[in-house]
Length: 102
Image (cartoon, rainbow, N blue to C red; front, side, top):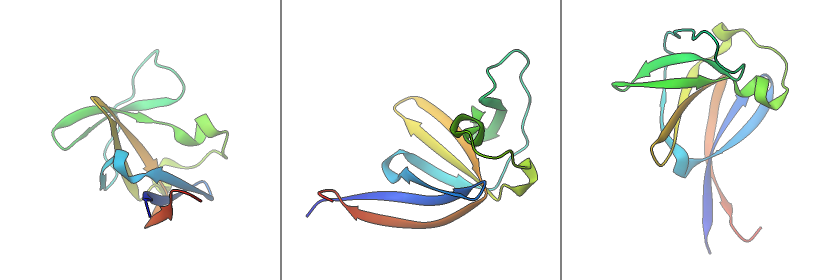
């Protein structure tokens, strides 16, 4: 039986399931350098694990309630090939495996 693994996290009171095969790491929040003239869904740049990467505003993209940046307890680093991005989440809850045939 094949399973798909997810990292469960919360953001603005909403539970998210992030595919674990895309998660590089979970880190403490990092200072954000704002960028002028960037799309609204990009909060700025963060320096994590010797790399500079965009910090995405996932709450804004999903239409979730505005949250205070201070409420983030974790920074989830996602990678799809060479595309690496950071997401702030309120809490990382667990890692779960789901039956792929479900």
